[in-house]
Image (cartoon, rainbow, N blue to C red; front, side, top):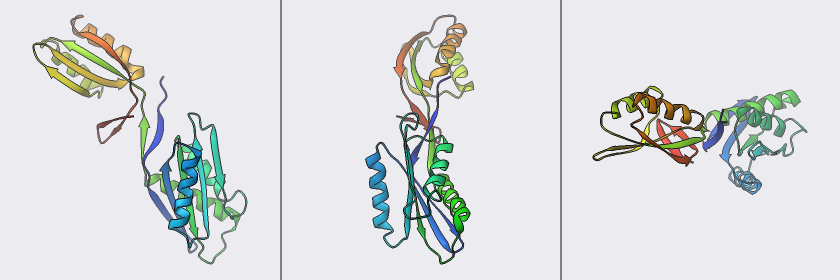
Length: 216
């Protein structure tokens, strides 16, 4: 089975209040450690009057690189719980920064761990997270007698045509999950009695947003 991975399509911001302390969690996609550093620094400038800017990021196909920072909070109470939220989310190449405005009441180590973790989850909940789907492009060329069968098979599986061209013949281009491509091609061949020409257009990762294709 091909592996689907999650990514931040659009970062968001979550907020919680814990015993008068305000926690702001900002989320972004990154492509490098430098991106993560720049994101943290931008929030230091934006929230210059806050006491802490704790952060974590993951990077790589298998999250080979991960870093976290407590930024002055007691060791292990801020960066680590943020990182745990990231690693358990299934995301790749993402960074979360949780900014804290101290409210005058000490939370204790357990309270800090819970607050930073909860804030990080709120940040992700406010973001647009999509699945990166490994896909294959199939170009189908058929006669008009076969088009209804192809559209029925595709529609019953939720596959949408990327493009269509109707002349003396019909040419349809589908982008479908790579793991399903061979089976779909075999079904088309059987349903149309071998009258459909099927060409493999190669691989293309994609995501779906509001039933629309996003080519990645």
